Length: 77
Image (cartoon, rainbow, N blue to C red; front, side, top):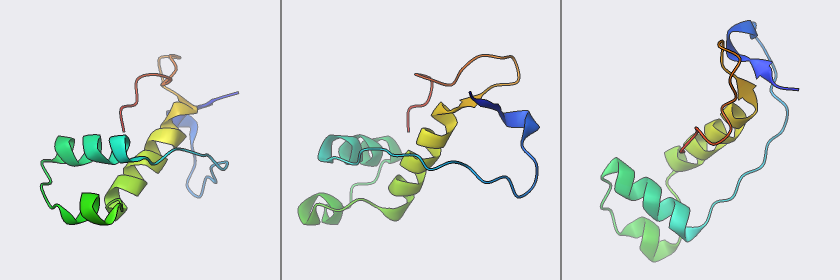
């Protein structure tokens, strides 16, 4: 059962979510942000904000919009 975003109260605790971080996804994130720092790809690491964006995207996949529509497939993070 998904939660409507507008029904969340202060202090709401979200359930655990999982998501994948792979080279293709990090490259897409970097390209989308216009980040051309080669360090991330060279060292095979992701920027911290990329991880935050992926986590937020995974949470939003479980939410319902106020109009009753699901976020599944809408989230691009």
